Length: 181
View (tube, helix red, strand yellow):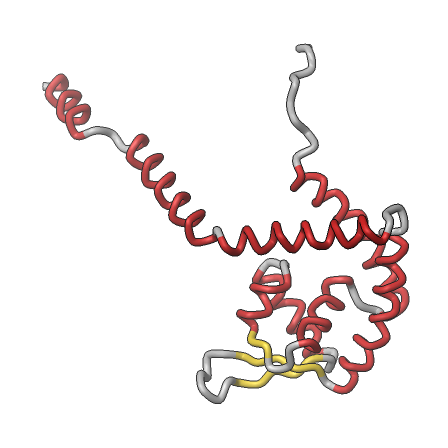
């Protein structure tokens, strides 16, 4: 066995993932008992309720849940008659979402539960620390959104570079075929 490597294990994204996963698990358990919904269901209902007519594409971009899972969750919410879908009038490819009356009632019942759980999760912080944390997280999210185009450009360049490095050079293939003769 080797000696422990001196590696950084407290990357901010790891800490955010840990905090998120642990609070999300607790929250989901409470929502399931109280409302029969997962925390992801509640998140989607909140986003749809806050932006009636939101498209599936917009919902995927803003909710932080993977596209195929959003599609499945929305289908389940439609089947449960909490969300209604309508085809776009300007673009028939777009599906617009809105809460049904039952969906509105459920998301309004979820709201005080969410406030209470958040207060309990954050009761180890002062009001000032909570405000600072919120401001910093918004700043990080905005910075990521603002740098997305350049990031995608750099990723494309990296892929091209890796593909070029992995491709056999024409002279190498020629010399190996010449040697076979």
